[in-house]
Image 1 (cartoon, each protein chain N blue to C red):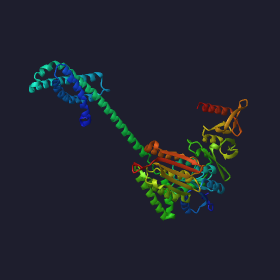
Image 2: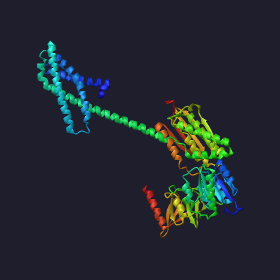
Image 3: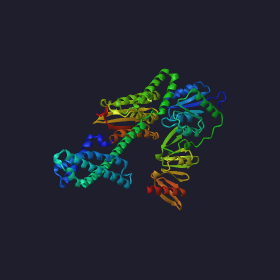
Image 4: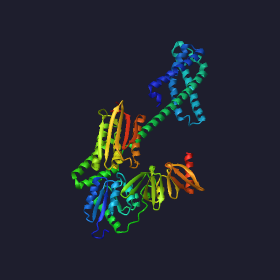
Length: 256
Length: 356
């Protein structure tokens, strides 16, 4: 893309600090082939701008209001070249795990910036890696998910996991049920299951994960089959292996 | 050197303890046929000298510690010494009697009359020495336990110092990196501002180093540091960062551990203001009532932002420092009220090292 004349690289700058944005603007001003399509000061703005403008390149800060850089990425996908810009070096491994083009550590100079830009051009010129299962890799494995971010068009919803009643697999998506509403998110139910705290959420069925705090009772449904009844009256099917897991959990809870 | 010889008071008590022993000996000799005068004239110099001789038990006692030496060794050491000293003491009594008989006509024949008391004298000498051995073992045990106590106390003091040193708040490196990035951005757009920021940063670092090395500082000094810190963050956050200060006059001179409030304000920015697109207010208030200082750091925060994983560390650090310094008299509590996050500290008021 960069090789073709006339076609500019469109970039979005995401940083909550004006001075940091100013610095990127300044470094980019010497590159006529790059056009700054938008500047965003927080995660919500970033998701909106990237969804609407579909830029080629995103300069992304990590510590920001509303959504952090990884959550933004989870919502916008990895179709774009991402250059992280942050003062924290501890996210570098996560960043490369999700195929970020580069990871600029503040403060950085023009030379280092040029290297990042060069890498971005190479990435944009070549074939992009297919979008990966972001939500599972964009999170340190030791730490259970605390909130789930969902995008609906340019709107972003943040669901604290405590408010998630259950999740249901629907093809490539999961439907996240919270307070009677459902939000669709492009993620497999298995990757959601592994991200959630296993002491609070249980896979009761090939297609269902339930928040154990919502379960009021488990009832037989037919021979070999059960259903769980949630506090709002919703009934969810329980598979045979799901029922075994549920019983294990209840036994353990009783033992404590 | 024997410990009693360096402590006149204790030596005096030791010699006093010999008076009843000497009395018993006078009584024994008197009932054995000597006159009261003769018995006293013999006993007083004998006991006075023997009291000091018995202090020598210190050395064999120390050389054969009770818990480490075998029974046979203990018995052999002390009985041998006791027998030798008993003989010595009897011999001295004999010499003394001869001397007295020679120089004072009223004691004529004392040496002959004393001769039948030699076994009694020998046994007394042995027993007195064995009593001294017992006394010295008690003395040694007491000394050992006092030394152990001192060592334990010393260890506690060292541990506390080490703990305070370890807990001493450090400047957060990310704060530095972000600052340097801001300076770097300003160099081309506003060189004057860049220079100003360098100076603010240098002042802050210098003050941190200076105050951090101290045991305590005044609240006013800490507040000055906090203001310096906020001035720097203000360059980064601009209008998003607003500060309110409400510090009572009577509390500015109170003494606090250094860098107690700066980390709280830093948390307030990192986990509060930095997560709000429009920013917010940090409110710091301090007052003193009935010798208790209360400090409240309050900031706006986004209740929807994920619970910070690292605030706990900063707060734990402050909690431990307060605990090490004031024990149960200090407390720290954290609460959230809607979109306000509050940390309150309470600890006893001290001024210039003394309780105000």
